[in-house]
Every structure is written in C-alpha cells, then in structure tokens.
Length: 210
Length: 258
Image 1 (cartoon, rainbow over the protein chains, first blue to last red):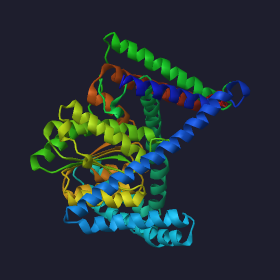
Image 2: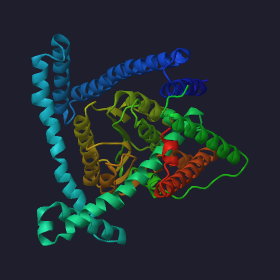
Image 3: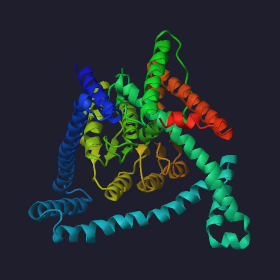
Image 4: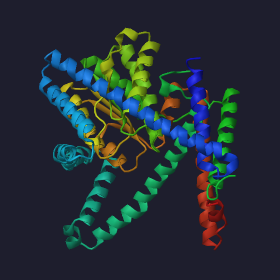
C-alpha cells in the first residue's frame, strides 16, 4: 500500500497532465483542461509548503551550530540574522518595497554576481588540469580548444585567416552534430524514464528498489 | 480531439509506449538485453569506498532543477542515483552530505536517503543533516555547497542532474578537496564543463539508464533496449527526411509537423 498508492496517484496525475497537453480545448474534454489547471496550482501550493520545510531545515541546522559554538558559528549567525531581516522586511513592507529592493539589489545581487564572475578563474584551472595531453582524446580536446580560442581571439586572425574559418566550422558542424545527438538521446531517455515511472517500474526516486 | 501540430508527437508517444511494453514482455520471457559498461557508474562504488577508507564524507547533488520543471527528469534520474549512493554509504558507514537547492526536491531527497538507510537495515545511522536545503537561489546554493565541500573535506563528489553556470564552481571545489568526482547531466550547455572538470561523466541519456544499470532489473534493461530501438527509428526517419528533401519532397517534414 505504501508503495502502490504513491505510484497510482502519480500515474493518474501524469495521465491527466499528458492529456491536458495534447487535447484540443473543447467542451467535451473541458474536465481534462480543468484538472490540468487545478493540478498545476496544487504543484505551486506543494512547492510553497516544501519551501517552508526547507527553511525550517536550514534554520534548525544553523541554530544548532550556533548553540554548539561550532568553529564556523559566525557564518551561521550571519545566515540566521540575514534570514530573519529579509523575512521581517518582506512580511512588514512587502517584496516590492524600497527597503526590500535595497537589500536585494545591494547585498544579494552583488554577491551572486561575484560568484558568477569567479567562474572565469575556475575555467582556467579546469582547462589547465584537463588540457594536459596524455592520451589521444586529450590531444583532440587540446587541439580543438586551441583552434577555437585562436579563432575567437583577434590574434588568431592576425596569425592566419584559417583560424576563424576553422573555429566556425568546428562550432557549426561537429559541435552542433554532437550536441544534437546528445539532445535526441536525452529526449528519448526522458520519455523512457517517464513511461517507466508511469508504469510503476522505476520507484528508485521514492527510495525503493523492486 | 488532439490539437493540430501535436498529432505526430502523440502518435509517437503511443508507439513508444507500445514498443516499451513489447520489450518488457520479451524481457519477462527471458530475453534480457545487456547494457554496455558505464565506467562512471562503476566508479561510484570506488568513490564511496575511498571516502570510507579516508573517513571523509561523500557529497551528492541532484542538480538545481525543481520537480515541476521541463528538465525535472534529470533531477529524478539524480534522485535514483542518490538512492544507490545512500545505500552504499549506509552499508559502509560513510557520512553523506546531500546539498539541495529546490525545496520540493529537498522533501523527496530526504525521503530517498531515509528509505535507503532503512532498506540497508541501518535506520539509526540516518541523520537529518545528511540532506541539507542550503538556499533557493542559484549562486547562494553554489556558495553554500562549495563551502560545505571545503569545510568538510569531502572525499567524493557525485553530481547527477541538471545544472547551469554553478556546475563548474562545484566541480572545481571537488577537485580542490582531492576527491573522486562523478558527474552526469543531459544539459548540453554544461556538459563540456562537467567533462573537463570531473573524473567520470555520464553524458546525456546515460543518466536515464543509470537506474537500470545499477539495479540490473530485466524490466528496466528492456526499457533501455526499447529506447535504443526508438533511437534507430528516429535516425532512420531523419535519413529518410533528408533523402526526400534532397529530391524535393516535403512528405516526411509535413508528417512530423502534423
């Protein structure tokens, strides 16, 4: 019962959502369209509740870290403090208020931008590790990367006009072909996974083997 | 009844359904297909084993996509692998840290890990801290996960799911802690980063075959075989379409856009 009930619910809901996508909006199948709409709204409500659970988990973990005076408890104090400030400001003045907007634009946005910017340095370290030519595949990767980089940088065109042409060819022919092949395989993988779940054959996402 | 422009897709879905049912019936009759080796999935046990030897935790992430997103299939594939990783951790008494960005995934992941420890007969070893919701914003999540990986010196970093720009931040943090990294995604834009930054990488559809590969369940293997047949049909259709177009006929093009 514990296993079959969630699978049965999932199958019925999946069937309704699939039909909602395919059927024409007409009076005879209005109930399918309505069901799809209601189910999507339920999804939003469930996500909101899940967000509450997540916040409780986050708060619990950091409050415990503070009470135990763990090594990095300072960061936990910072997190709990920021969380409380944002919740209080959000509830008291709304998420469109100037105070909330100020906190969002001047703390969260620059912090996110900083993290995003650091990717540039990580690309260099990842490239340094992976572009060491130790095998045939590494050589292919290295040569391709060198050609594409030279093709994109002004110095490549200054050395030889062939680099921009070769770079464009690599990007538009082998690269696109490879990407499309991966996308096609993945799309079929999605369908097969959905059908497995639909039939209750794959229950590992519930933590259950057969 | 079926909307114009979606009729071919609907018919294809029905045909795939019939094909998979046929493959499953064949498998139940004893014709079990074999699946090629996936070194990335074989490496998971090695990664958990090494973490056990050095007494350091295993980090797992099922990606940053919620369960209602169009790419949620990747998250579900990640949760299937999480189930396997959690069982290995329970078996070897290894600490597991699962970082989650989406709250709905957090609820499911918690249940998956708890159930896996229960199935291994070690429910007492499960701790709430094994699954951590660390923030619902992309780079806040990345900062938290990278911090956890550094502070707790994870010995293995396993990431199966869908990512965006933060993928490289996580894999580089994993590389800096010196652990084995097993990643997998069907998000084409992030695959190059995962391939160069990790030790093993599952590419595209391989993440969807993970559950079948790890369980060696005949029925699941049959679905993978069905998927390969479908792939051959699609390739055939593409070739046929190209030939038709070359001869000036749009018959195939009109059929698939119906």
